[in-house]
Amino acid sequence: FEDVETQGEAVQQAIPLASVNLNLGQPGDLLTMPALQQAHSDVTRQLEAAEALATLASLNGAIYPHAALEFGWRQLLYHSTPEQLGTPSVDETVFDALAGYREVAEWSADTLRRSRTFLAEAINTGAAVPLDKGALQGLVVFNPTAVTATVPVRALLPVDPSAGIALFNPAGNSVPFASRPYQGGQEIEFVAEDLPSFGYATWFFGTTTTAPTTVSGEDVQIENDLLALFVDPKTGAIRSIRNKKTGEDIDEGLVNQVLVLSETESENKGGKELWTTGQGAALSSPAEIRSEHDAFRQRITVSTPMDGGMLTQIYTLYRGIPWINCETTLDKVALNGKAAVLSFDLPHQGRSLLVGERLGAQV
Image 1 (cartoon, rainbow, N blue to C red):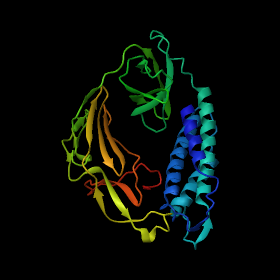
Image 2: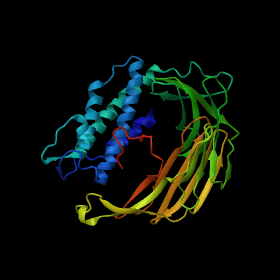
Image 3: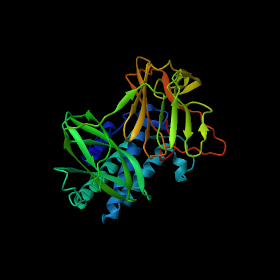
Image 4: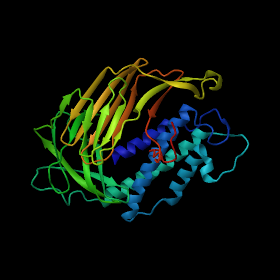
């Protein structure tokens, strides 16, 4: 809960009270500006977290903050896709979009704080603690969806970075996991199975003298009980995906390939906006491909030099989970006058695209 609240404060502090320069245009026209893109993405994620925790709190007796959350979503829609509000086209007007996003950040952060406080008082993590496992602390995992879920979980534990960790599920059974030192503690990763819908379950952790083992290598293939994934060693993108239950292969094009687009300087309004043109240029071949196998996951990490920095792509398949977890990060990459995009060359006949963004894909 403290981690969630800290993230909310960071989002709020990152958005200025006013952008100083007022924007001339129609609402929704300004998401070509990198600063507004970042604010839109950060505030959307925070508002989703506030909505999820408020829902769980209301199911435990709290009053659901309808007005605050409706205001937040309407503000986001107005400044990004106002046609979804039924707003008719208007002439150009002057408004401060960053100030609007800052207001949403403040309201959603307040909702997060209130929901966190209520839930912390309502949850009793000590009631189900395994008494035969020594001194343990509780780790609460929420499921804000309407179905029972099995999902990968990452959490920062207040444990000495050099200490070993023991992890137990709600039934008191040992759970496989991976950990790494992070921010003075340890970040732990595991699969939380059978989370109840609109509810939570408590895992328990303590210290031990043993550590989990990981087998490392240079494989370009990983798999779990449901999927197999093959990485293209020339690009670092996914070359093919196999459904092990049906035998279907998706191998008609590259998936999660990073391309670079050049900027059209004549349309960028002195650098305030980002407009690109032409075909995307592929990067050089990866400098390193590394694989890891644990008891609950298999992972490939691809490192590729890119414009003075490093592009890192991480593909993970978790045991019992029918999707691929893709993480793409840029470290010290100087994209001056360029835009980096992710390309998904998938067969589209008879299919529809599902994206993670609540209000549509904003890149």
